[in-house]
Image 1 (tube, helix red, strand yellow):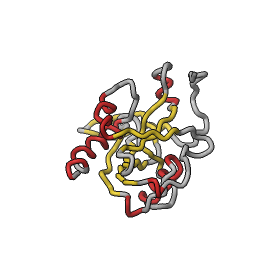
Image 2 (cartoon, rainbow, N blue to C red):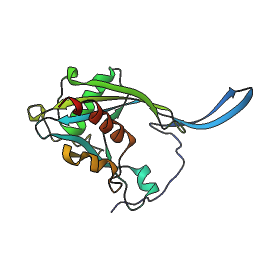
Image 3 (tube, rainbow, N blue to C red):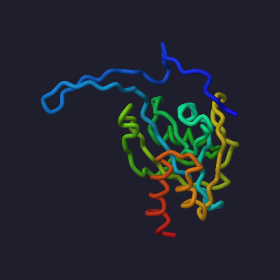
Length: 189
């Protein structure tokens, strides 16, 4: 069982920085409280042999803070852009760390880039699609030592039901990428 023990203001944050943005708009001076964060990459993984999407499931403290009964989230494999590498290289590393598949860079197909959390951070995320099979599996995934990530396979025949079943807490990126898959990739099969 997971629960929130305390919430406090950060004195020396590692990944986020609270700021006040002062700006002009339509002739008036305005102010907005925001959080500066890293941009990110995310990957919709498709397992060709299992005919399934590969997602990650992990506890998110922010969700647990809002929903004390369940902080577990189904998400795309993703990571922050904090290295001096290309977005594709970072995406490839995240797939290996979180899901255990060593996918070639050329397998990563860009879907789109967009802003998320626009009311608080304006994080810019680049979304990729990649196909994999068991020959690319080199470890069990699970993330880095301070992460506790479960690799989850969502079969194609259950994917639409999964999308709308709110008992599976998921990110908007999962929904958007599944829609993209059904509209783009699945149309050609």
